[in-house]
Image (tube, rainbow, N blue to C red; front, top):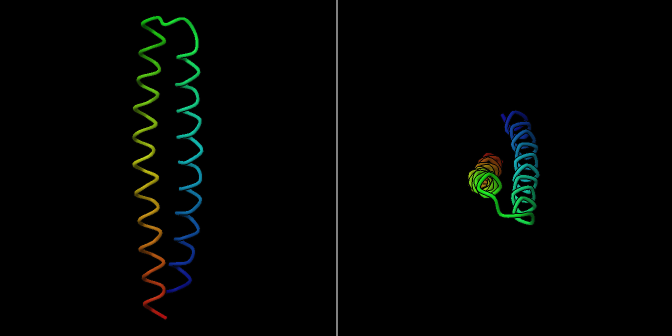
Length: 78
């Protein structure tokens, strides 16, 4: 059982890394859109990018909580 949980933690950690990198990329892209001339299209795309960044930040937070729970379960089992 501990091996299965350990593999699950590894998988969740990789998803956490991926979500963090995508959130950083989306946030950076949104900021770069605001550096040019403020047109309606740029502002709209930047707003969508910030929304995506917010959703990914919540996803990262949930992954982190899930990983901590899995680690606690393994420690209890030992």
